[in-house]
Amino acid sequence: MLKKYFGDKAFYHKIIVLTIPIIIQNGITNFVGMLDNVMIGQVGTEQMTGVAVANQLIFVFNLCVFGAVSGAGIFGAQFYGNGDHKGLRDTFRFKLIFCVAVTLLSMGVFTLFGDGLIGLYLRGQGSAQAAQEALAYGRDYLFWMMIGLLPYTIVQCYSSTLRETGQTLLPMIAGVSAVLINLCLNYILIFGHFGAPPLGVAGAAIATVISRFAELLIVVLWTHAHSARNLFIVGAYRSLRIPRALVAQIAVKGLPLMINESLWAAGMALLNQCYSQRSLDVVAAINISSTFWNVFSVVFLSFGVAIGILIGQQLGAGDSEGAKDSARKMITFSVLLSIGVGAVYAVCALYIPKIYNTTESIRSLATSLMLISAFIMPIDAFANAAYFTLRSGGKTFITFIFDSCFVWLLSIPVAYCLVHFTALPIIPLYAICMALNLIKCVLGYIFVKKGIWVRRIVVPEGEAA
Image (cartoon, rainbow, N blue to C red; front, side):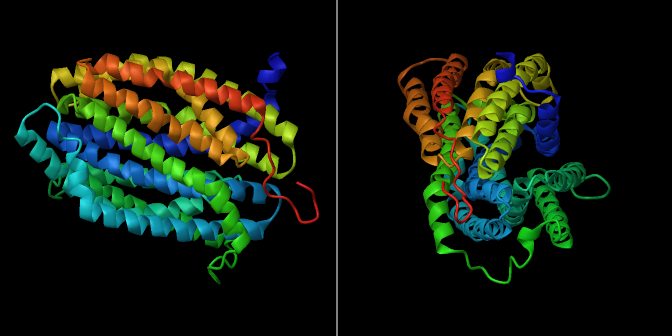
């Protein structure tokens, strides 16, 4: 039984080498995002609320791009595991073309409908003046952030492809460099140090945009300078042609995943909009809670990415039994880690909200929401690991049902009904909505155990599938 769920030293060494750079990159990124949030929180509650709402919109965009690179990345990991560099190059081209199109479309939506989308979160109990101030700060922040959307997109296309080849170190270095630049510029531009004018929320956005251009330079220049190691980039721009057969395959297998990530992100944004109907204080408290949740959840979320890469490579190499064995052990490891991280998060929840320059009621509410999230963390870790396992074999329609359909058909209706048809306070309401993920875990366990995800979708010519 122990051997079934726990690996040997070589196994854990392999997954740690793969995962640690992802954890470090994502951890530092989210840590600096947390510091950004704290700095803006020192300026005032309305500034923090406006930025939090604008970031909900940016979050949906980020997940759309993530879904696009992930959908194509299913093929990228298996192409690399199969030694097919041309296939990987074509996959990279698809990512680039599709994601740039998504970015331009998103910028158009934000430009035309940004004010209306931000205003959806500012309808809860609270003063009209506070809502108007938050809207103005959110609009200003979103305007500057749009400049950084395109470099962010290109970096995701490059970095995701590098990770699919097992190269997680360079994206980590680029990400760490970017967040350090962001942190320093935040300190200067938000508060007006070293002779710079105090720009507040605009300064935070400008710092982020500059850091994204810096990350872009590092990733792109290194990838092209080391083309012998990154054969997918050789001749990548000689033509933008992608084989129709591959486009069709990605459309069939990857499109559900792209749609899933977009709908899931939109669903999370709508859930937060439901919570915001209780009061403007809820918007600020959820912002504090989610900011620190992003930092503490980075361990199990990064293990999900590693699961997708490792199992995808094993399936691409035709090692079905090895893929099933790795999935079982990595899911177990991810859940156990999340139990420890969740305990630390619960302790920190008692102290973290006190560092914000806001009201005591918002601090108390944020602590309660963080404690609920800490208790649910192992459940979320299992669901996340199951999701990446199912997706590694190209079963994207099942992941669509497992992820987006769950949110839209269960989580959102429950939250909407509780908000609009009951007087239930936000704390038990939030706990009930979070606890629904137990159902998701049961579904994930059934799907993974059945082994329907064990499939090699990239097969060398002349071999049988």
